[in-house]
Image (cartoon, rainbow, N blue to C red; front, top):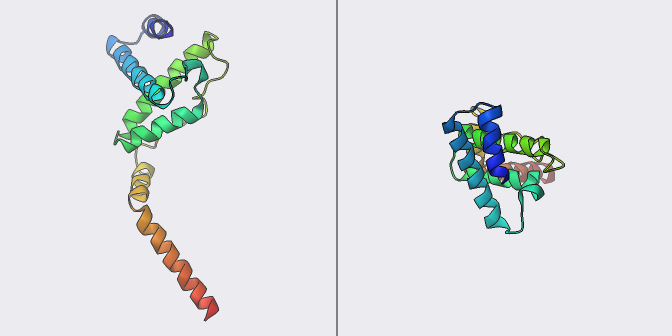
Length: 136
């Protein structure tokens, strides 16, 4: 029921286009499928920011572009603001969430994840060298 109300809200109060409505509905459906996979007992009113963060991380790991992840997060932000306005929830779990950077830092994050083992080994090697200098 809340989904239909939300789409009406987008259509009549926000004047969003039919294509935007479809995109929002797809994003919400994808998020619902994700939370049902994690736990059948989770409802829209029991979602917290941790669940949404895990979803965002999963989307990034699946290779979605930061702009796509940010659009999906924007959908959830709109949804939870709507639910808060309708008093269906007490707190907006998206309020403090920030999506991935679209340039620069995101690329660095990808490189860091990709080369994390290499970088870790390099740091350990440098630490061993420092310890050897001190000891010997």
